[in-house]
Length: 100
Image 1: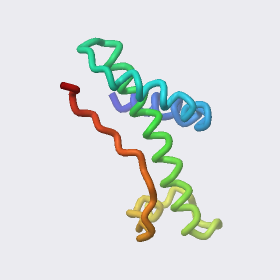
Image 2 (image 1 turned 120 degrees about the horizontal axis):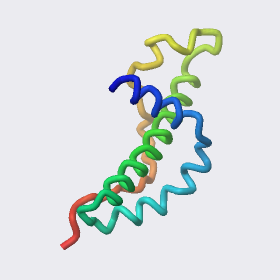
Image 3 (image 1 turned 120 degrees about the vertical axis):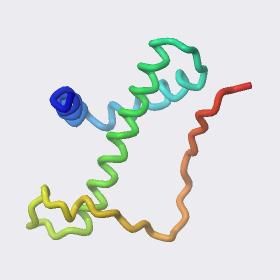
Image 4 (image 1 turned 135 degrees about the vertical axis):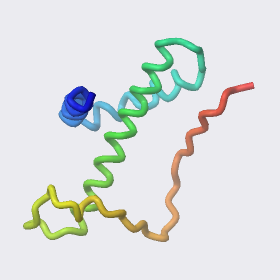
């Protein structure tokens, strides 16, 4: 199982973030209309993978901006929680509750 997950992570990491993000709206719209189908399950997984790449890159960039460039990027210190600024930023909140 872990080998399969590593392979998926490697494939996902090799994709262009900008290309993935351009698909975000498409899959967000698709998952808004829940249907108990394999297609819906795949669509929500695709949306989740796009979000995972976006989150991974944001975390990576935040960690790199706080760490000296000469340190080993594989160090566990990069995995410590990142403190957020207290400046409020607008964000899009996703509501995944079933529609009535």
